[in-house]
Image (cartoon, rainbow, N blue to C red):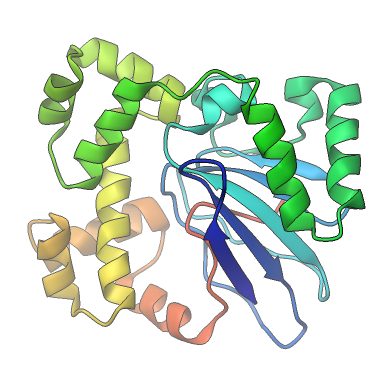
Length: 245
């Protein structure tokens, strides 16, 4: 079972997932530009921005907790450019050193509620980290609203090369890829709410249903019908989080 709530950390979401033996497989977690700090019951992990669908797993009875950062918000927190964390799941010790990572893991493990402990650790660390790049936050807003990359660059006062370089650092990939990912996520939110594929495609900014289908295969490695069917019958997962190390 999956649950989430807004975090006290601005722009973040706290989520938990308990794996039950009768749950069966969950549908793949799709790229969305987000990054996560994860707790799998005995250790912390960092999930970087995905460029392809990722199928989570876990043993029955396992409790996972995560703090999901909005696109562009995590690099300042983790202290490394997003492109260095693209796709893999890494140990915080690789980023912050063994001693500090161990202390943070102990705080989460000792908490009565792992999700609350994870959030407390994140709030304390975020207080010592620089804020996210406000220009890139503005770029995300434009792209998520369906704006073009050119319009987003103009609104942020950045040239094309500057925007691409800073996007790699903030999101893990260039602005065109981020725009495609955000558009796919808009379409899938509509599909999950019952909107027909063709209408969802147009509302999200695709040329037509065939365009959305191609993007689904390219970015998610599956079809719209397969995704919609799995979303109906399986345990929902956060779009940018994975529980596989």
